Length: 265
Image (cartoon, rainbow, N blue to C red; front, side, top):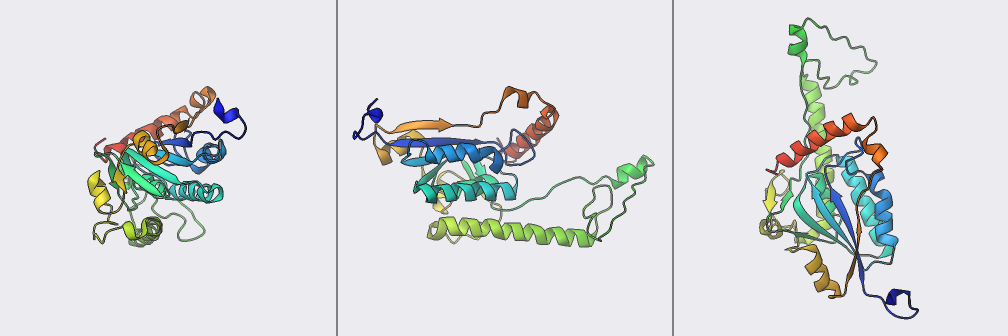
């Protein structure tokens, strides 16, 4: 009530943004820059928060979307001069850690999985299956690279070399992001950027996190026992969940489940 009384100082407010799931622009249920834009804008602006806390539980996903989300968080933090804290639940790996690194400080649970600073590309090859079924694949291109890594054709050495170059560039972007955001807190560990993962206190020891701590007690310690919390979560209309995207989102859910399964979750 007192926040509506002129000249009476309100208790500090922390905006809590939940980021749950894999990162992709191809599904309504995934984390993407477009899907999160409005929610993040409100979190940094509404009520003049003393801080924004990110609750992260993500095995990763699209490198571009991870970069876009992280960049949006940094821009809003600087525009509104609001500190950002990340709190990892089960996992913040790969793109999930990219987003976490946008925070000024990162806290983990003792059993949280953190890291996987690397890039992966996976798929299937079906040329033998097609040949056994008597199916002939016909591809016509203008440009020698247009059919790169076609899953219906045998792999080519030049395609693999090209993919390795692309993955290496993405990996260097990821490394640059982590080095810029974590700075001197990073330890000189040869495994840091190999895709290795760390749990809880081990993540703190290598500099990928700042401490073991949970959202409410940590924010109370920083802003006092009277700190208020305003929570933001992705909400989708029922028509979106029951629309023709249902099949796509079901397939995405299977892929997301596989993403968490990589970390035993």
